[in-house]
Every structure is written in structure tokens, then in C-alpha cells.
Length: 303
Image 1 (tube, rainbow, N blue to C red):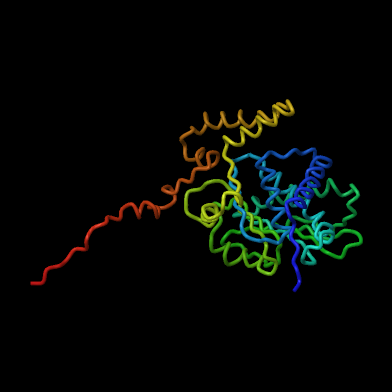
Image 2 (image 1 turned 30 degrees about the vertical axis):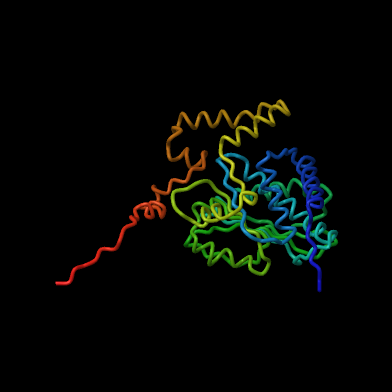
């Protein structure tokens, strides 16, 4: 019987170290703790082909686009060299699809990936672009036959998304995505590869697949980082580096509190990550259960 290899923690630590060197050398980028967790779990799931769903709930402007885009670039450049060297089972392609309620939203990650790849174009990675436009990046590495593709999609109800085969599915603004579109259109693109689905968003106003995934996922397999955590992580980096840039987020939060009000729905959902379901539906399931009264059934008299 064929024994399928998996990366153990020691292997993964070496891969994460390679990732850190890659980030620092080419982008002068230092991960926050929550960003590192995001990158680690995506890399581990992709290399081990574990599939499943990863919920990532970040407060606004916390750096999720940066870490997602750079992690995708790292995987696209190193995936085949890693799986071959470590003798891991793999497909002969590595494709990533980015989805959002509107195409402009999915293009945020996509454009960051394009910018990063352009920066690496002459850094010795020996890749060439076969396609490089507003919807698709397709490139190969010299001496390797495997293709790597990155797609940018709209997941609106009216969009006619062309079916692709994907290894990683990224669902941006997941709190606003429609469950039927995820289930019927997007998820099947990962059936052949057991693709990992990455749900990314903030809190919202109605029950949805994103909230369901958050509630059902074990704490070690999900990343939830509200503004308190964001400020704490940046303060730690400031103390380590003395770079005042890391104090900007707390200043931004104080301004948002003054502008929106700490008790406003906008601040609660976008920064405190508090779901306000009563705004998006007439009654929540839990509220309905609370109305149940335990008593003997009414017996009707016969006349």
C-alpha cells in the first residue's frame, strides 16, 4: 500500500522559516502574530493537501490583504520545489481563485499579488508570464512543466463565473457572500483537488456560511483578531523595533470611535467583530428557541 507522506511540525517549521526569509528579503515584511497564524495554516493545509475551511475574521485595516497576497506568492513560487523535495503527493498544477461579492473587492488581493510578482520578475526565480491581465495570471518556471494560475472572480448572483480547477479558494468579504453561490458555483471548483477554502471577513448582520464555519471550526483552526488584539500585536512590534508606524493603528481606532461611536453597529461589526443578527433578520434562531415554553399540551374537551 502506498504510504502518503505528510509534513510534521519540524518540516513545517523549516518551511515557515523559508517563508520568513522570503518575506524579509524581498518585501521587508515582518508578520504580526495573527498574520503569521494565517500564513502558517494556509501553507500547512496546501502542502499536506488537507482541504477543509479556514475562517479568518479580522478587524478592518489589520493587514489581511498583505498576508494573504504574499502567502499566495510564496506558495506559487515554492510549491512544486517543496512537494517534490519532500515527496508529497500533488497535482501537476497549482491554481488559486479569489472570489468576492464584487470583482473590485477580489481585485484588491489580486492586484497585490500582481505587484509582488512584478517585483520578483528579475530576482532569480526564472519564471515567465504566459498570461498577465486583469483576470488571470498564468506563469511557468524555467525547467518545469507545471503551470501556476491565479484567477480573480466576482461571486455576485448575476455573474457567470467560468468553472476552473483550484487548489486554494479565497472567499473575500465572506460575510456578504451568498451561500448558494458558494455551494453551487465556487466549492465544486475544488472537488478534484480537495482545495482548501479560506473565508475572510468581518462580522455581519445575518446568518451565513461564514458564520457557520466560524462557529463549527475548532479554535486552533480559525483566526479571529479584533481591534484589541490588533493594537496589542502592534504595540509588541513597536517595543521590539521602535518603529512608530506600528502605533498608527491605535490612532486610527480612536478616530473611528469618535467618528462612528464605539456602540454603533458599524464599529461593532467592522472592528469589534460582534455579529448583529437582529439587524439582518426578523428573529434569530436562538431568540425563537427562547420563546419556547415547556408545559403540558392543551387537552380539548369533547362536547
